[in-house]
Image 1 (cartoon, helix red, strand yellow):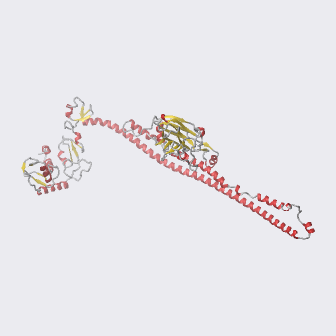
Image 2: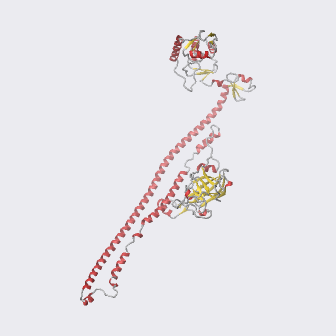
Image 3: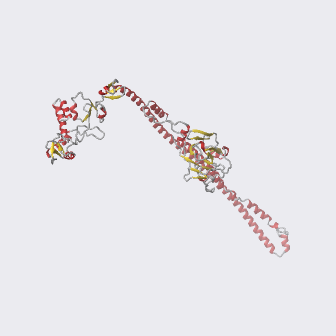
Amino acid sequence: MSERETFLIQRTSSPADMASACSILYEEQVLCSICLGEFNEPVSTPCGHNFCKGCITQYWKSQDNAQCPLCKRRLGNKPKLKVNTEFRDMVEHFNRMRVQGGPKIVAQPGEVPCDVCTKPKLKAHKTCLVCLASYCEPHLESHQNLKKHKLIDPVSNLADRVCKKHDKMLELFCRTDQQCVCIMCLNDDHTGHEAVPLERAFQEWRGGYENVTSEMKKTENSISESVKNIRCFVEQSRETTADEIRETVQILTTFVASVEKYQGELVEAIEQKQKDIEKQAENQTTLLEQSLSELRRLRCDVEQFIQSEDYLCLLQNFPFNVTSDNTHLTDQPTGSILRMTQDIPDIGLHRHIEMVKKSVGQIEETLRNEMEMLIQKVRSSDSYDAPTQSHVVENMADNNFLPELWSQPQGELMKIQQSNAVDLTLDPYTASNWLKVSDDGKRLTSRGRQQIFSSFFGRPFKYLPYVLAKEGFSSGRFYYEVQVGGCKRWLLGVVKEFINREMYSVPTPEDGAWILNRPSNMFLTVGVFVDYEEGKVSFYNVEARSEIFTFTGCSFKETTPLRSFLSSVAGISSIHRPKIYPVFGIYDYYYGDNIVITPVSKP
């Protein structure tokens, strides 16, 4: 009889308990003692024990002489076994009755199964810390009268509740070493240590945990309030944004309507001018036709007079005085005709389209710069700030309830790298002939003679070893980094878009350039930060995370009379914002020297 059977029989004190124990014993009897599972083709040995046919056959293959695995009786030659059909039918009938009469709660993956049930395993209802086993509700009946047995909610890690050294239950908590121990540990590794029962230690710890959970609850409420405030803020922001969009559309619509109004007035003025020209031309045409008719009549009279042979009558009645040159005969009508033809407007002097193109082009350029600046401001503006959320995170970190979720950026350069990084590409059409731009537009190399491009593509620097980036900026902030370690002497900075590219000397801020010229052995990577609004250009040593030099008070913006027109129409500022372009250069022309635009390494 197994130890479990002996334990159950000793603990049984009533007929009901005995029946339950017999039921458990019967379940164990329908299990193969080799595979510990339900019988599969059960066979009986000559000594009367039952095994699965496959299990006993495999067992005998590992031995020279056949013997019973239970009683160790030698059976001589390996006997030929036949399936015990009656015992097989009885086992199948028992399994069917057990499944039909028992509860239907089968243990699912992740749930604790009953240690007594055979397949299918039912869900455990309690775990006994004395027996170190879990039981379903039917098998738990045997523990109802065992008052000394400790039952807890089902657990699967029973091995963790036993001392690995003494194989005893962990019943005590050592305050000295802050760990769970068994009763034997007090006489061994924990001699002289202060130990208390687990329940008492748990009650002491519960007070501290209750304080922690209370603080966590406060933190949860703070977070919930922050979430509520953020959602409320988003809803208000959505409504405000919708109002701003409507007002923006209305403003631009008004501006477009104003432009259309001026367009109509301009077209009307041109049409009226054309009508005046046509009327004036028509009047002059009428006068010319009258003069032409009079001139023809006079010519006919003269022709008639000169055909006559009555000389006396001709000389006495001819309407004009005749001289030798006869020029005065046509002086009067010819002069009148010339005066009238000179009064006809010259159509070529009224080329209104040229004036329109020139003025609209200037307005369009100014408006485009203004709109680009406005869009950049909207995109780069900090439109959201949640101090409540930051306060909650700091409170959580200070109390060590949760790991630190956010580390505030430290240092000016770190903030710039995180917020203002841009991706630049070199423009080969602006490169000096002594420089070569790589195919990806990221590397600039000395002595690779560039192709000479016509002004249709761009205007290269003629005498200075410079090249511009393709990207230009007329508002906001931007930052980029360049590796300069592969160059003896380099130049970095920004210049205005209309800078003179045929200069011989290094341009200055008065020329529209803010550049830094240094030998590369001092630095490996240089960062350039530009604040268009504040007029500042700063250079940083990226490895040392220190500032090299800063230009302040840079005059990026300009004023122009054309802005006054736009200001009167739509209230646009009279300040012109030309684009500035990053500039790169390599001096001394050492073959192979190069600088590389690298991605910004954000901390």
